[in-house]
Image 1 (cartoon, rainbow, N blue to C red):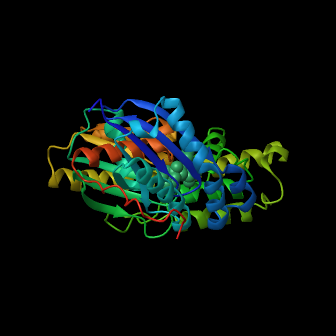
Image 2: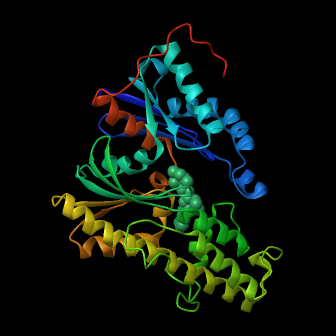
Image 3: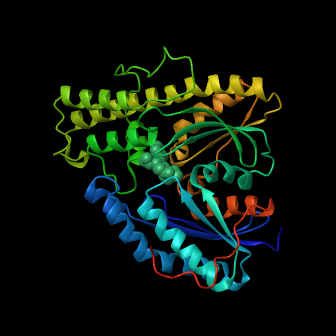
Length: 354
Ligand code: KG4
Ligand code: ZN
């Protein structure tokens, strides 16, 4: 597998990312262009704007990934690209680029599911992770608990019935007037360190539902109400110009939100571990991945759940938890080795985007 070289391309949301990974898991390059300025300006991902930003960045990002890996397209074994889920306008930019390279250099293509990639990158990080394993995937758009029984064989144990946890972090951070240029999640995590996590009694979602699903819309509303009822006016006053007292209050809200948001994860994960061990008693690893998994508090609490149940927590480093090209390339490798790929596009496939 050392001879295998995979280019991975990711454009499903707000980051344009590419990477070259070798078959044995060696990361040869990892490039990412983020649209954080646009996010701050528009208050979220505006599909049309994001598409244009991807289209502007994609050629450079891919070229840089090839250059840094010191390879050219003709050295590649195949091209892997995210085909969903995500914003279709954005996905198209990556898919178009991948097909173009594959056509010119006659390379097979591997279409990759973004969430599967968040889960499988754990196998690059820790070679001991083997099927079956349990995975919690927590990002801006998804909350998933899956039992991975084999490559391509996943049992979904739980999903979100409304918002994902990352969305709740992002909105709360915005409402608290935080500097979200580096992302709402990291900003809120930092502020929470200054707050008292027991100061505000937010309700833990879905305690009466004995399943593994998630809900964060209600907690989001509770945060909004906590801010409004304390007259914090955070939309107008950024935290940098808040008074000492006001800052402490915001930190208390952040810390209390984080405690309850993660308690909800803990509840669902404990139940999922029990379900999963009943179905597959040989499970050894509990994988936690996706952007929110780069949060230290989240990791610490879920590590506790893993240990309590005799499992090992595997959580990729933050750069591989948030969206990246490596996870796409690696998942491409897993599928390619298993013989799951598409033939190169026909030479007469039109170049322009449909
Ligand atoms: O996986 P990801 O990069 O993109 C999606 O597939 O959505 O996840 C992005 C999400 C965002 O909501 C971001 O705020 C959150 O992950 N996130 C965090 C942290 N770092 C990123 N949430 C909490 N704490 C963090 N340190
Ligand atoms: Zn993601």
